Image (cartoon, rainbow, N blue to C red; front, top):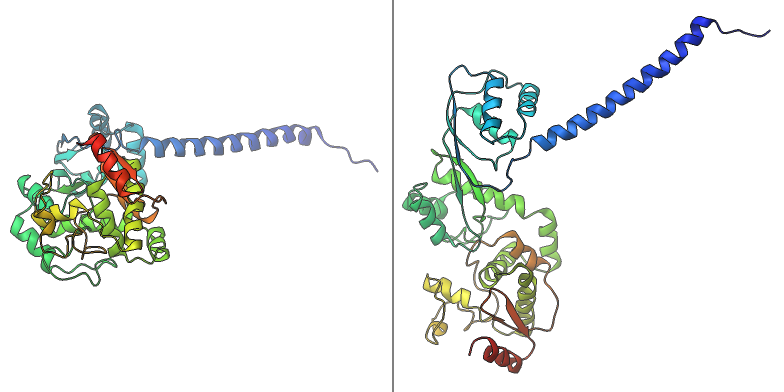
Length: 347
């Protein structure tokens, strides 16, 4: 017996196929729109430290706030802001007031700032290679901290981080760990708030990969940061950092003093461009002209490039390096070659 399809069933089949195709296309559109949403939520100018004064009048709707943010170049998309706001359940919760925002902030960061209602944030930058003394002077000069309160918190505050365990007591115990970066904090942030932000950033940068690599090298995190701080103060050009790190490893391996001018500058408390013979004879465990091995601790806060350079140094036979005057260095294996380079670039 032959079963015949009715015309009704024959017509339904193309419709079902069309429906499946539409649903599949719809899924593709959703995926694309989600990707576009994530892209739109990125900072307008990543890494920007520009501060933009932004005011939210009382009673402003999400639509009005989004329009003002886009007009002032603080977000990429008014539509994305509204959609993210709705998804997060923030509609009607943004606070009126004056805010210091930046095109370097993501849409989510701006949403959080407007949500708290605290307003008036401020940005500050701790440059790579700054030690605690220079960091304190900079932040105090920008009226972000009280220098004495900041120093007291560093010396006596309790910090619950894996890398702060066992650090020696004293005013410099966090040397090397106040990570150099651009930060945004509320104007009423305390000295402790600011210290915690910098320690949080160090924890974020010094990943589990870095901890495992340090262990492979037979080094403690303190050793890595100490050597990285010296590399930070010696190097200017990025590509020189792993080479300089390799030079220091070579010296350590044969028991040769590191002879880093940067460690003597740390003792002096100033960035003296040319050291005297007397400077290199100062009695201090930080004087790497007098003592072999690493100094007792970091001499500054190294950036991630210097940390990576120490963890992944460039292997070579070099034992000497010399600044050429343009920020880069020339390297040599023997002292005789070093003297030739000195005559070529300095004398």
